[in-house]
Image (cartoon, rainbow, N blue to C red; front, side):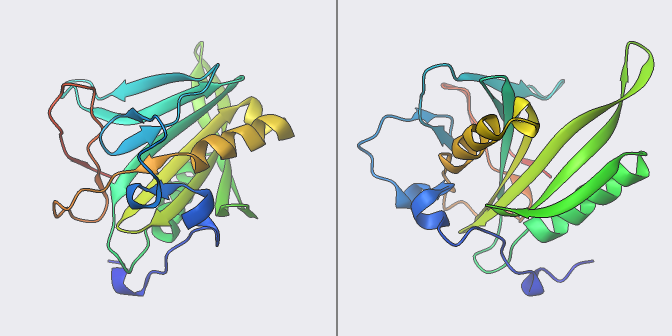
Length: 197
């Protein structure tokens, strides 16, 4: 078991001013689409999809489709002092490698990232899906992103995906939650639910 007290946080040096943001770091003047733990700035051409777990009906992720790319985001509870991204990044890399995929770790504008080829069956044929995993440890939360589509090969699309991720606002309530529990993403009018990473 990993000693969480010894795990440093991973975030860009300018996170508090360039995002992703804690709700306490943004003014209430700007209009946001409020989904409970996540808030988004509306922009032209942006399509937002809620990913719902079968059976329970709870929202487990939000996918942002923009200019041929998809950014999937998930917010998790964390402690004030310890980060999750270093541990989770290792788990993602191990899981994809065990499935026969490939993982390349590199340092991007947000810090350590993973570029992966994930095995997948497409029309009964073995194939691979490319994905880029990003993560930022915030105050008492961790935000994970998975980027696919044009942003993996086109520099402008990659910059747009990074900008979408950095514009996300995370609302971490004062309700105590264990680290790695998914912060409640809400469909307007739906009661919050909790799930673990």
